[in-house]
View 1: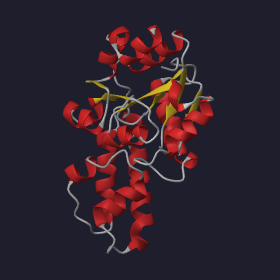
View 2: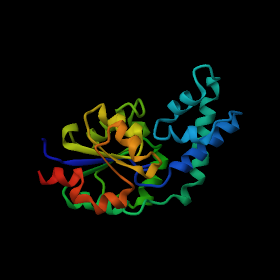
View 3: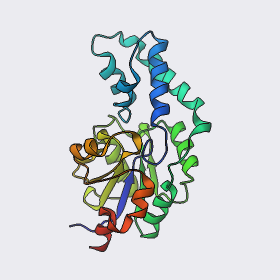
Length: 225
């Protein structure tokens, strides 16, 4: 097995407790244009790119001229939640532990650039990461692997040298397309069973539990190989 050189991290729902803020922001976006979409349906798609969320929930027969307004409303409403964003307990410590082990740390986020800057500040991550991506770095969003390809390039890494940490089934599917093992975190609202069914090699409740079990986790085991 190739030596572990880096860890890619999703951000929303993985390091920052933001999934339900995104759900509510999407709900407002749909409601503004007269679409009554249930929040649980929205939540199941958070982690995909915005255009894919709109397409999945409204279908091919929708008035696609509304798409931009829905996307813009989501972005505007989500920005009102910026002051309320908090990192998950253990998120910064997990990044610190990876850096202390000599690993290259890349935030493989598909957030908008302005959101990513806020998320990085919330975590206090700038001194702990080697690179980060935003939606501008990917032509197609998850579950397509484009953002992970961009993250690998940004970190100077190969797929065989990394693990991915994410919270959504879309994260697991995107990583699987590149044969990258995923450590799942249930902090974004997907259950352990769902993440394992999608192909996650391990699942922890949240960053704190992964940090506490670091040595026994697949990350720790790969480091000791």
